[in-house]
Amino acid sequence: MYSAFWWACFSFAAIWAQKIVPGVDFLAPGLLLCIQLEKKYHIIWLIIIWSLVQDGIGGLPFGYSVLWYSSILVLYRCGAMFFDVQSMMFALLCGCVLGALHPVLTGMMSMLADMVWVPDRYIFEGVLQAAIFPAEWLLLKYIYPERFKHEPV
Image (cartoon, rainbow, N blue to C red; front, side):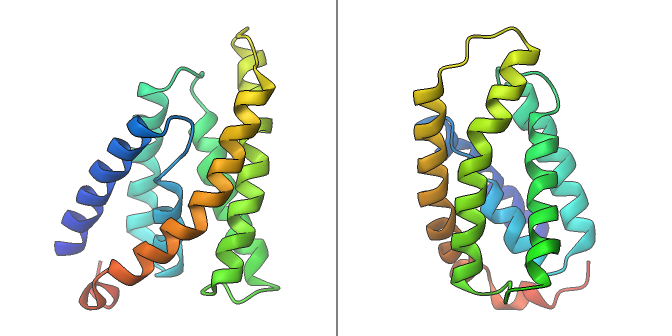
């Protein structure tokens, strides 16, 4: 029960951080941490809630965050075959892949919505995402309470 409160507080802080640094998803490292902790029900609920929030407040058509969070799941599953998924190197790899994926997904969704696609802006946001993702993941890994790691869902 307490871990659900922790994730709610994290969601609030991450959405607030996204208001300060637009174009960067501060929720994504939390999803990776939740996947690494193997909290299956938390993962499902977080993806549903975060997708509704992201697509509800964002300017892109519905589906961007579903693709974004699904790509994190796929990246984790593929990376688990080759890497130690608990390591900082894996978080760096995830950050780089997600940073490169951000302009691609944004461009695709912009075309679907007949919006103007500004490549310089979205590439810059992708670079920021790649830089912030591993640092935030490392911070979350150390501040996530140890007693929640073994709490039944």
